[in-house]
Structure formats: structure tokens, C-alpha cells
Image 1: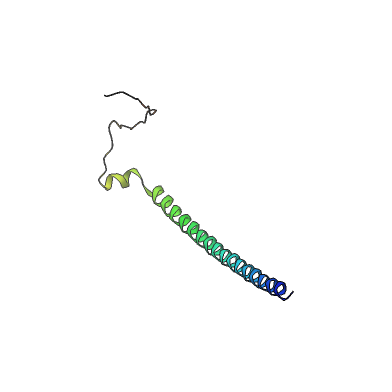
Image 2: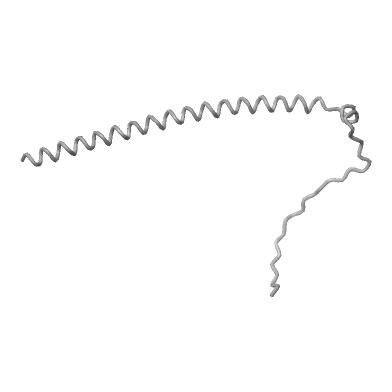
Length: 93
């Protein structure tokens, strides 16, 4: 009888330790998630600032600004066009 009580006591202690470890891991994961969410929020804010700066700079570019910076007007502009990619297999033995 004493052996069963001792075994049950050891099992209860082991389960309590396991429970405590799992709760600790849950708390650590929660804190890490909150930190990640805070970082994401800060990065999104910084990105929004960069986008606003870009939009302001892009809207400030005029033909006069470009010409004064040394750019010249293209007489006949050329554009690169991507065609549909194709795959060909050949036997080169």
C-alpha cells in the first residue's frame, strides 16, 4: 500500500512539474508574440513614413527639375517588353 501511495505521490509531483513547465512556456510564447506584434506595428509605421516621403519626392519631380539635373528628353523612347516564356527540350547527344 505504501508503494502505491509513494508512486502516486511521485506521479502527482511529476505532473505538477510538467504542468508548471507548460504554463511557463505558454507565458514565454505570449510575451514573445506581444513583442513581435509591437515590432511589426513599429515597422509598419516606419514604412508608412517612407512611403509618404517617397510620394512627396516623386510628386516634386517635374520636367524642369529633370532637365536641370542633366537628363535629356528622349526623342523616340524604347520600352522593354517581356514575351511569354517558353521551354524547349532538345536532345543534344
